[in-house]
Image 1 (cartoon, rainbow, N blue to C red):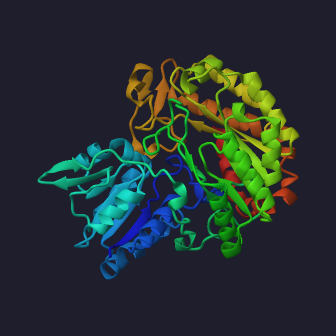
Image 2 (image 1 turned 90 degrees about the vertical axis):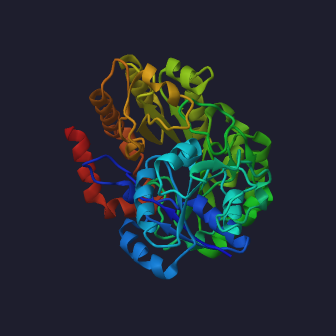
Image 3 (image 1 turned 45 degrees about the vertical axis):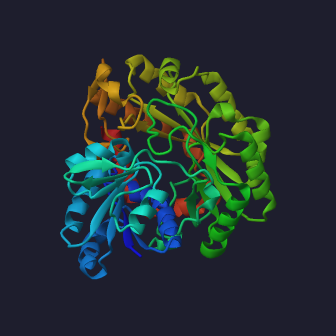
Amino acid sequence: MSGITLVQPCGMNWEPQRRDMSRIANIMPPIGLCSLAAWVERHGHRARIQDFYAYPGEESRFLESLPSERPDFVGFSVTTSSFPDAVRLARMVKAVPGIRTIFGGVHVSSLAERLMQDYPEIDLAVAGEGEEALREILDKDGRPPFGTGGIFYRADGKISSSGTAGRIRDLDCLPFPDYGKLAGFPGHYKMPLFSYPHAPATIAVTSRGCTYACSYCDRSVFGRSYRYHSSEYLIEWFRFLHNHFGIRHLNLYDDNLTNHRPRVLAFCESLARSGLRLSFNCASRAELLDRELLRALKRAGCWMISLGIESGDWEILRRHRNQPADLETMRERIGLIREEGIRVKGLFMIGLPGETEASLARTRAYILSLPLDDFNLTKFTPFPGAPCYPDLEQDGEFREDWALANCLNTLFVPRGLTAERLDDMFKDIYRSYYRRWRVLAGYIPMIWQSPDSWRRFIGNLGSFLELCRDYRGS
């Protein structure tokens, strides 16, 4: 039996020289680590979780406890932006004799061999889905050879691999994620402001993968496969969350909940008949929605749907979403969602390869023309596993700085634009969106529709006003 401490690093979550607002607006549980912890314990090993994103001040206590707790392994789940912080922590962890480090997550899945070569702090790396690979590493106490694909390790002075990672076909074979290993769950973990009606709320992932091939998405972990839990599994899981933790709202954090229509209709019917008084959010592509499906989602408790719209310029969408873009159909579906009594959130991105002054203006105008209930704007961030990554320098200037790869910093500048111009437009769109009376008035009903969000907002009013002043004055 081996012991492992699974770590979520803190990383850079905001913009340099600006106050980090991420923990005020949103602290979501590391559900991947919760799933891995449950899985390895089912197979006879010990696991605990250290979440530095939720508790950034616990680093010293964690490091001081290692000599006495002495886990066999410390495993880091990393994104691109959190990878440098994980390496820093791993360097200190390895100062304790006998502890080995394992790195996994989306950034590792894209660059595993390169990272092993460049960072001696990494003893083993897992590319792709982590359950079976991590189980075998613990079963064998980290000693090769390994029969499960996706494991990178050091042997005879060189980097070796166990081959291509496989995928779990039947997701129902997995145990429920062990949320109980998170300190302070559920109260310490917060969903995005004004994105839920009741607390406590948390996230769940009901499927893996996405069948689409957008140029900016890293699919190195799940590829373009699509697998999902059965309705029976999900109802049992959600009932467990409700009964053990009092959960009242779920953010279903799938890439696209509605990817398989028969599946989502069956799920909605099961949830509606379950007697669970739960609401939920989900993400969808607009073209997959129609009135029948929206009514099924509403009956099941759907409170808000997020749509990845990305741009108001049809050429940008055609190039990066790999299909014709019908902006008027998008507008019609937004209206349809609202007609069925579901809130709708638009997700946008600026700075993609091919962006111009004209496309920025079209996106700004399109955002302001839509009847959205909420919106989010990010800056295009190149991730190593994304299809567009290898050709970026053909379309502009790219500064590879992993620590800043959090969708809030400008790392890629399309030809013909400047970083300053992208930053100005980013702020201008936010200012223009939230200055409108219709948008501001929409938050008044949130006093009774999302009272916990209002309590959090008022409790941190000073920080939000400081952010507003920063954006207004830039």
